[in-house]
Amino acid sequence: MINPLRGMKDLIFEDSQKFEYIIATASKIARNYGYSYIETPILEETALFKRSVGESSDIVGKEMYQFMDKGENDVCMRPEGTAGVVRAFISNKLDRQDANYRFYYYGSMFRYERPQKGRLRSFHQFGCESFGEGSVYEDFMLISMIKDIFDALQIDFSLNINSLGCSDCMPLYRTKLVSFLENIKDDLCEDCNRRIATNPIRVLDCKNEKCQILLQASPKLINNLCGSCDSDFTKLQTLLNEACISYEVDTNLVRGLDYYNKTAFEFISNNIGSQSAIAGGGRYDRLVEFLDGKSTPAVGFALGIERIMDLVILPESKREGLYLGGMNEESINSLLQIARKQLEVQKVTMEYKPKSLKAHLKSADKAGARTIGIIGDDELSNGTIWMKDLETKEEKTININEMLSL
RNA sequence: GUGGGCGUAGUUCAGUCGGUAGAGCACUUGUUUGUGGCACAAGGUGUCGCGGGUUCGAGCCCCGUCGCCCACCCCA
Image (cartoon, rainbow, N blue to C red; front, side, top):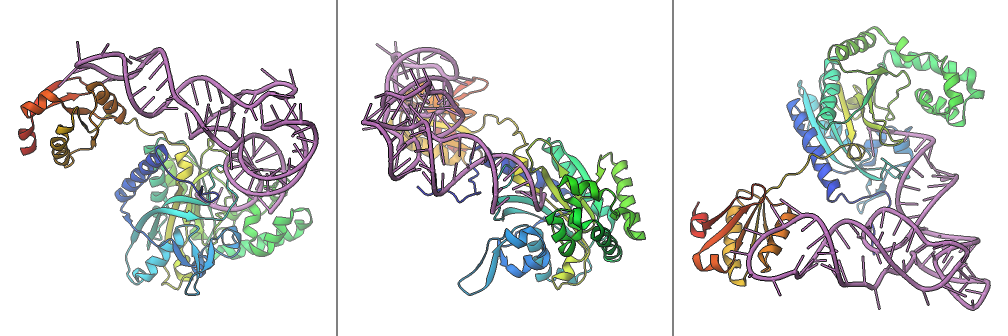
């Protein structure tokens, strides 16, 4: 027997229903916010992710499904969605237009990780990317959208925000931080020491308790922001307060991908185990330029669908559609005609095997049908069909020709 | 990559001191003439994950292996 690969799952029955429900809900809200659907290839040049996600990240460093294709191209299954959308934005030369573009997407992402609860090798994200709008109002609207999505899905969350600064203030802060870290490096863990050289900002969210105690005295990014970053961050908090969206400032919140600047945020749930981030995102004003496009400000986020599936409760499904069955072989032809006609307006479940009325009622009930239509011996000779509403229990007998000519 | 836990029916699991397997749920079909959900009855040959070992005898003990889960890490 061939099983799915490690960390890969089939979405079926209740899971696939949840998936569709989440995508439908999120898509509708995204469209209301002015986003249009974009679909980009799952396979991209490896260089795309190395340059966008960043070589220092674990994602690029050790988690990519990377291989040479038959044309000797170095390719990679996308580990996240933003890079592909940004690439598409540039490939379609939208960076040359002085306009705003907003896209939403969803689909499979691939990371070669050790699977656990809320972490799969093949998983799904829903995301939005907004290009050309540098105002912090857009950051706020994005957060507002995510809140709307979780509210619509009736999911509890807490929100953490931070500012990562920009190309003016971040390098200065980084220098300050590195010199602080150099002084205490002997007491920091191995990982932290490695990161001082590769990505010092990441030292801040080290999970090691000893490190965290030492880091309490570290210079804080939000105290070292330049004028514009500082006022934007203050503005964002004001907007959130006014909208009654509760949040916490987490000065150690560092997005794992290298391309973020300024606003960074993370939506957390406490009810799904240790992989608690259900949405995350922020501003990435320099990424378009990194990927050879014309400098364009951008903000975006992604939701982890599987993690949300662990939280969402499906709305109760109601009886719907029509069940058709015959009590004799001769009635099947008429039933097929009725089925094809009715399929234009509703779901139809057709049973080909003649069965007793009782057996048909049972099957219709199990199929979740709202109405049942049966042709027995009497109906066959009269050219009629017996119909019953399984909820109201109303019954009637209808002429088949009339039904077909409607 | 590092830990820990667990692999028995479609599924959730039970299986005592080692004596070659059981329950609930689900599924199918019935319960006599054309009225569903309930109830009752019937329907199981499952490589007990796989391979070795100990033993007269292994689902149970030992070793190996594979897989799954959870946690670290990382991230959505």
